[in-house]
Length: 197
Image (tube, rainbow, N blue to C red):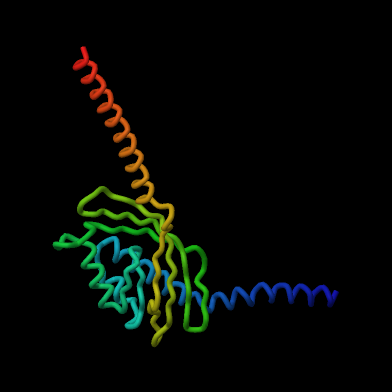
């Protein structure tokens, strides 16, 4: 009976301790979720300050177009240059809907998280296009506050909507060229027959 009780107590304790250890990070996980929400809202509402305030002074953001911003000021500059109604901006709107792939991994006061995002881009000079992208973020805790030290946005270079669009355009251009060539050949043949008769 004592052996059974000892096993039962061990089993219960083994189940509780990992849960308790996980609970030690509950506040940190909520803080990270709040940062993710601010980044999402900041992008969707074109309010770059919501994102920039979470970037470490030496933080690095690698955007989907492979440009790199260092620190919050460069993040602000990038966003203002890319999105909006100002002359020279590329997009009138950029929206994103991120999801977390799993719980953040903590290394003391350092955390890493990753996930997916459904992005929608509205350029000034063409129709809307959408990317299914991935993201990875590294954060560190500075004086009780989590800051983004590295954020990487990535999409499939070899298979995405822009490549598919170019392939469709190439097919349309090829078929159009073939039809035009056949029509010209037919016209040229008809004109030769007329001259010969």
